[in-house]
Image 1 (cartoon, rainbow, N blue to C red):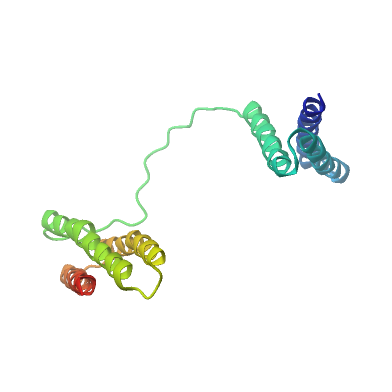
Image 2 (cartoon, rainbow, N blue to C red):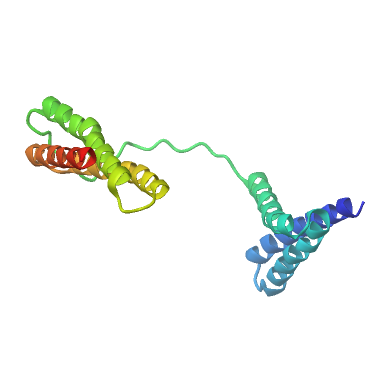
Length: 182
């Protein structure tokens, strides 16, 4: 019974606190409303503590006012259709590169499979040969792969010179595969 009364008190304090904060933020002077709202939210912690203990009370004291606030926002929301706007010109128009299809295909192969091979090879080299404990090596190697693959993709899609990308990623993959094989 005490738990149910505590939950009711916590819920009432959350609703009252959100109402007072909402009112305080909309009015001037807002000091008493804001102070009262925060005080009610703090008092709600006592009700939640009677319901579920202190560890769960802190979570409920933060979660329930948030849900009440989202409910207030949803009830006050106005849904209006957007006005149709003319399509605007892009801020920067990129020139079409010569040999667009083949360059795009090569760039895609560099960003996808070649960058992935280089990243996995580096991750394998770290997982096999880093001066750490076995579990730490495996975790470090596994965490390194997506980061290096992302960096390889960024490089492959932003650099203008495809030969530099191919040589860099290819050499990186070869060196890391050799390091992993040793």
